[in-house]
Length: 137
Ligand code: AMP
Ligand code: ZN
Image (cartoon, rainbow, N blue to C red; front, side, top):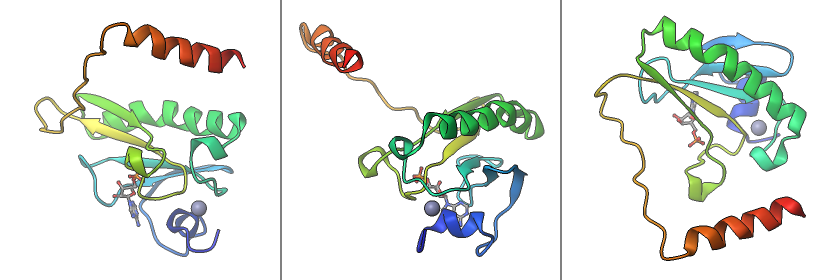
């Protein structure tokens, strides 16, 4: 797609620090990492976010993430790994070409998880029912 940063990286119009590539998927280092080794895994074919990916596309991406995460962890001697995907501006997506983050983590590295908020009275069941009925349809 014209004017998509990650399409340009996939097409090699913009350079990247590639760590893995196959026919469908490219993995390269995030230029603004949470920790060194922070890796992005993208489909070569443009899709804006998870809802634009087929199940097969997503499974290929996740297969790559599954294989790479322990390799990245070992290579940078991390204590743990976060896997993340931001979908939509409200979720923090900045580049609208689907991608997964493999984020090496260290004890006390200062990166903070989100804080959860408690449900109101009866709210958890109502929300679960909303989702269950959407799943059923
Ligand atoms: P997201 O918020 O999930 O859309 O994340 C986009 C990520 O892309 C950010 O973590 C950026 O640091 C990263 N990024 C932006 N431009 C580049 C680039 N040219 N090469 C590698 N990573 C990039
Ligand atoms: Zn793209």
